[in-house]
Length: 602
Image (cartoon, rainbow, N blue to C red; front, side, top):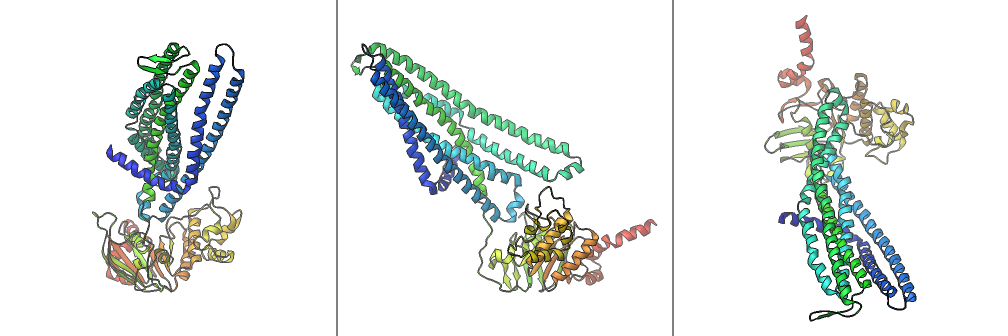
């Protein structure tokens, strides 16, 4: 329990750093809450006096009654206005807090490395940025406003009740802890319940997003039932924990209301007895002498007793909201605390030639499972380097290391003799153009997608890049050509999407290229055209090509054959075939093997 309180204290301290820039709204909320409490409590005094005036023996003081009723109406009007302004201040503060939290979470997410993206479910991260931030706003700020107003009401009503009749006030104070005790017992474990609830919500969203994104694959393999069962399993767990959390939080309010109702009833009975004993004069109880306790004062006391106990009900709700908010805050700060990639660096390469050296490189995703060990590669500027090998041999890992998506455990990578860790990361990555197997396009126009990374490119330059990538012809067949917005209603194939990504790289015109199965989704005829375009753009540039189809890299200046994280063979296609080693067998498995099998069957 102490650890939870310590964690909550730390979370609250961090959240206050987001509130601090908006002190004006906080000050306004405090001022208007005080006005709201004062004028809300002033009303019962006025109508209590009006009641006493109306039942006064002899003559009814109508003028006093009218004055008090008018004053009561004024207090209600001012109190309502103060409450409205209080809500405006709190809502403005909430919206700004939500904006700042989401901005910091998104900035942290975009600055995070590929490792974070690889190890976290997208749906869960989205839930943190969207749902959890809203929960923080509702629970912390709006709850805090209710808490402050409630405490003010409790203190003010308590002071007035002691002035009116301190004996009954003492009874109320003595009985009130019963309400607090009931609330404390019920809400003791809500933090753990709500924390588990938001975690399962993130798991549910992640699964739904995963299934929606891979719907075709799910249908193809008839795994709809399995997907539904998994969803139902997560949803059942969410229902169970959500039911328990909501039941606990929902039980708090009626329980405290019942206790408070009992207290109010007791006060009413006791006050009625005092009215009878007082009979309009001084009330003497043994050695104590109290002022007259009239029916008007009894009505005031009952109103104050009700207003005194009412905030305890609200505070019990606020406690539940705060528990939920703290649980969500912990999840949001896990995103904002994610360390971004190191962008610093003091060395700059004015004109990149493209010499690349990898010296004694060691790397593994899991420290207990070695992957790349003592890798050494030397690449001359302008060379076309092909990286081949079986699945899982480390081809893509090598590309990730070249792009500094991951950093080496030990060893170093040099570009033009400069350690890449000494070069500012944003400048370093501008030296590369990269085309991946999976195409990434935004919901923007075709022209915008091609110019992504080269925002200042002219329309003529965009169209020239599209022509070079052999996608100008299908772009012009779209409804609005280059101004077509790529939404779900625009039907373009995976191959066409990849052509747009290739055009994007051609427009950027980087000194080095990385092609990770860049033509895997393109038909043979288009691939021949793309290879021709690639030969043009790769001329004079260092190019790294990850390929499974060995027919696409026969003209490479150097082929790196990888297996189990190591480069086991290097050379041109002809040199490697002469060695009759691993590459020779790999090549024959794609070409000679099928022909030989057909001959044997014949």
